[in-house]
Image: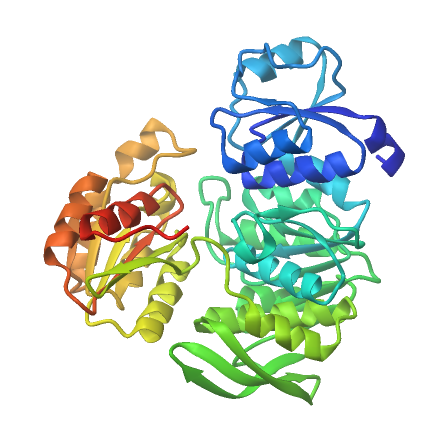
Length: 466
């Protein structure tokens, strides 16, 4: 599929309001594709597409389908019996999944993909920000809203295209980037993969798809990533905080959980960087960004400026507000490692009197497979509240196999203070009554748990940030 063929395409997108799909729609529009789309809910991204000239609708009964169509593109959440998908199938319209179409669009750019079990959104956004600040004007599609980028996607005039590369359903194998980073490889998505070896095999296949004149950057501190350096994948660079690597920090000092360090590349000290994002994991992410931005030709002074001035993506340790001396923070973490490093970063950054964690598990299957790891992740939390597990992509058998009380029980076995509270409103009521000045409340999860943060601020009498 070449650039000219994109200009002649007529594409309908089911689930167009999501951050990834809406970004892809904007990129297709720039290439001259005739795009239309529907979604069940009119999100802010959905509305902006309509303003840009893309016909969008919340009517998904088939009435919004154009008479002429070449392709229908679906998000991962669209079931096979969706009315629009059924009708287009009957009409003989070819279907592509989001990742398949993303890969075809990436082929028309200098593709840069960020892969890994976690950290993809922050690192992708950070790199896009550094490239934009350096004047390279990249296009990007990120799975989170980024205030400093004006949203979760952008269409630039430069040649670079930054995108997340998700391992679920092996969807990242549809991407053929020239540059890529693998931040970490751990157990996850065990509803799809049989075990860790299957996950590692998928990442190895992804790495082999990078051309010989491209570059793969890997985290040498992660054993599963380090193993990829021994594969025949062309050029491979490394970054690490503890292990010898091409990109390393030295003389690292921590202030309120944020790193100040000297960046070293192949033994040469490039300069000092002071990060605004807390946590050791963000030091790792910053090194990956530095490596990729340098490969794109960004001068070191511009790299350092971008690393220091980036404020993060939405729902990544995002301060939602403060009232009565109680800070309320929201985070997207839904994997055990993410929970652990985020709680550690929050503890060091805010230094609270007491740290409350409201964690909504995401998927029954993930909770069941990683139950012990989840229970071990709350060492930095003083009090943990767990509502019902967010039900998505699971079967009724998965739902019956584990529940939120099981996780609470495992946390208690490890000496933690944990409580199961089913309803969001009841969680907000309990915390509003018991939290005190100097406390930090952090809501965590990939589902709608952020509503607890907002409701708590209302109960405490605070105004929500814009």
